Image (cartoon, rainbow, N blue to C red; front, side, top):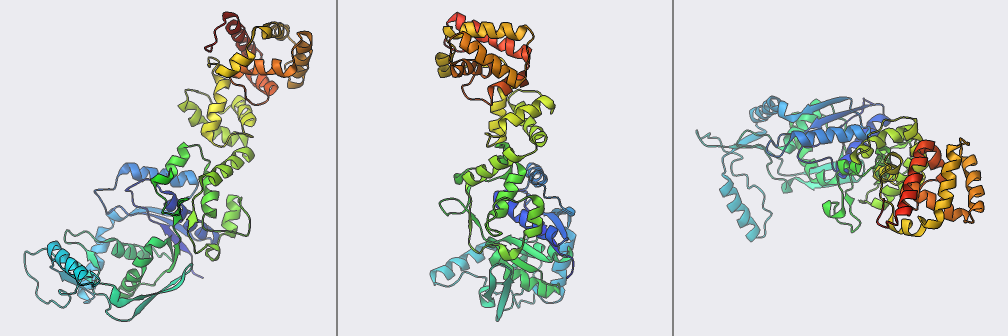
Length: 472
């Protein structure tokens, strides 16, 4: 078997869409599974709509997902001479011709065909024209076969037949000299030695035209695999009305890259009942035979469940590193040090996203928080003050500060002051975190350190003494 070569060819006219990311992933997995090459090509011939911002976002999104490419990125805008040479070759060989029909004439004929119940395809009137009027603009059309059938032997859909009479003479170069998509994609895929074209099935209708161009140019035809589309939960095509649709948005929402990769892999592909895969398992087990024929439905809750799994099971040091930008967005300037890693360990069991984790972590680094109103009203009460005073004195006297010792101290002081342990613990929890829910209280105290705990307990005492119920 020759070396497998796949490609991902996004257009920098928008951010990296979830559908595009899945296409890139399947191409990447197929190439990695077969120890082949994954090529990145940027289809930037639409100058008016292409932008550097979108290009940067696409490249960043692929890097964030870990989809490294072996060649490229190649830019179509830098390959115009190659396309012109191929157009000239088809003209010389009589496989293409100049079309002098104006846009107005073409539209008039289109409307007439619709009115008469005919398919509005080009009528071929310039096909056999031999004169070349000077000064008139012209497009160049491919001379498509007018009879026979073109078969697309699709690796996912099976054989799909297209009647050549239904395919009109495709414009391969516009009157302004710009080559068209269906033409340049064939030239690029052929010259780059692409063996497998894996893309969304919205491209299936382009495929017979492209096969005819491969044949006219004398290039080997790659194998095609058209992936079912991704739908929203209402089973319409995934769009912004279903929520976030770009990889960039999910990154900003605090998704982990391996969670999104795992989710996208399972969106249309399966391996038995297995739901969770390491990256190496995906490479080993991926095959086009296990890609389904029906559309995948994007379920944000399932992605959130996977994300929570990867946060919970992840290496705390790696999670801490990924958490840093989310903390900085909240004004918390920290480094990935041992304290942050301990903080992450306390939050991993509950956080579903890095945004959630950053919000939950903020109290560790900022002591000037506002107390939860209901929590303060219920737990920061005058009867807690004697307990807090004694606790501060005991901590200052230099007793142990390990979790087990702190728990013993709490039990002893609560009994002395006639408080239930839960009442005392919840009061201290609100004093230290501002909230009624947090990681384990004694774990929190150990991470904050003795001096910071004393400082926050004194703040809570002052709050209780002031009788101010509006917060700290």
